[in-house]
Length: 141
Ligand code: FES
Image 1: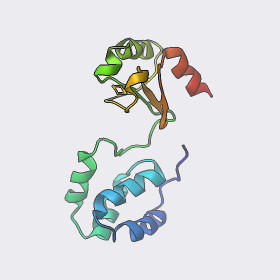
Image 2 (image 1 turned 135 degrees about the horizontal axis):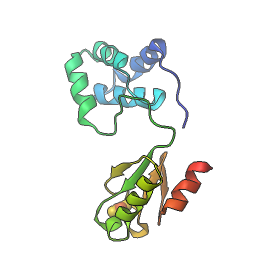
Image 3 (image 1 turned 90 degrees about the horizontal axis):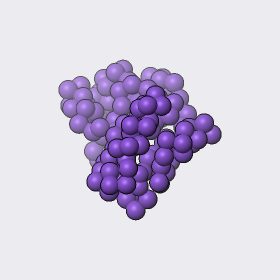
């Protein structure tokens, strides 16, 4: 997934559309992240101004939702499901294998793909019956 480099003008254009919708702070944060890949510190003040709330309120929403990022995402965003169904079919061993291979990842809790665990999500692409080899192959494509 490619993102646009941070631009105050582009952010202001986005916020002119999102700040008038219900729940404007969260929608604005999501729009900024969708467009730029993350929510830079410079966006917090713009969102506060556009939504007529304090910077603290924007920061509160930003830090409440774990899906919102404050730094650019890695090239490959790998998330490994470690919920019960995936653990029962080897997600812990998969994590160990990924660590041994030097691959960074995040833990996640259920992608709704429990019957095909262990489940992995790479850049929003869901993989079932994942292995270290299949994850490496997907990252190299
Ligand atoms: S428990 Fe892993 S996808 Fe549901």
